[in-house]
Image 1 (cartoon, rainbow, N blue to C red):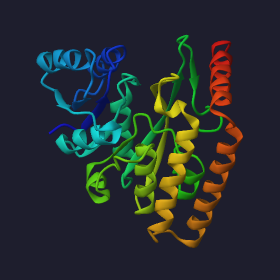
Image 2: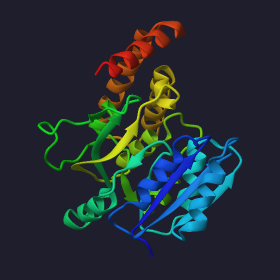
Image 3: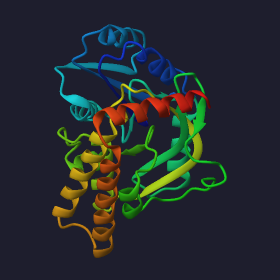
Image 4: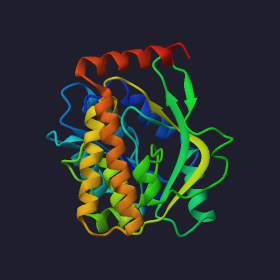
Length: 276
């Protein structure tokens, strides 16, 4: 059995999926499997993924009607056989030492359910910006639920126990930020998180991503946090953090102004990033 199951949800990702899968082949740790879930693509995504499946038995391709990212996550994890799950979007990259470093973290710091790492925001001009500065995030540390309510930890390439998926009933397919919702429910259930201070992934920044729609992202966060409050599983301190998080996101949503104004701000932000 492989140490890691890497699940790659893919929808119309023909421009980026080859780079994502090539990076898996280049991992210094060879003990992995990859489940690519083609989520009803209408481009060449499925055909490209099938080439990897034919060339390397560690790849498995699942094709399904479009169910959204959460549905693709669920299909991939349910097909996984390893004890540790890693989610990698079809436009992100796990750098060659990623799986080996995460495996070493699991051995060196046992007892955690979620392991995440540092990484780079990867801009359209090919520049890379470190997510967490080395000065601020040079040591392993854990994110509490309260901290994650305020702001999610960088989770590209995060690894978690497959048993956690079963305990939570998988990803909510109607959640806009299905991964953030998953982390919140995991931590609320008692799961323990550890941050590994190595930059091991690339997160491609693009205006076409779901996360680029800030209004929907904030509104999705608010819905997920409300559900968490309604579950009755939070302590008094966690409930306060949840309400604070809702108020903050409501203020951020109001600050976006009109849809047209949002588009202008996103464009300006992209131009600023290009200028470095």
